[in-house]
Image (tube, rainbow, N blue to C red; front, side, top):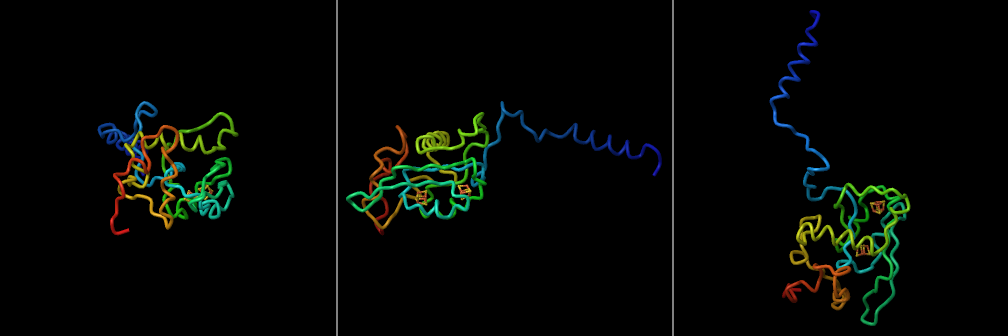
Length: 185
Ligand code: SF4
Ligand code: SF4
């Protein structure tokens, strides 16, 4: 190969890219939209959770804690729901195991923390995160559905009415559904 050919070819590649539109964005001023089903994080939606603990049993790392107490109507009151993100490997097995899509992959990818302990999230912290997400998407879950599109159905008819407001002051939840939706059920 003649001397300098490699340099010329390299410059040609550079020149070609100079006139193409940029494919990068000026993060953090500009942010790309997170695609539906992106495994960026874990979001827990209290209004969809029955407290069945299937997610906790499916987690190989044991990072999910679910503590419940029985209600008179047969449903479960969720006393505690916590995720230890310090040991979570974001495998998504909990999201696949949940029968009610109450825990889903998605949400922010920029929630870095200064304190390692802050990665242990209790129910309030998880609900804050989920509500912020829902407000940003106008009630659309990471899987692209809304409560109205995919209302909760359990074998217990009263189980879904036990969260009066989804999270603290949230605008999304079973109380926002337009009545009993599916007459076939
Ligand atoms: S993503 Fe995997 S490791 Fe993390 S909580 Fe879910 S099952 Fe456990
Ligand atoms: S997140 Fe899903 S699997 Fe886990 S306790 Fe709630 S309903 Fe059950």
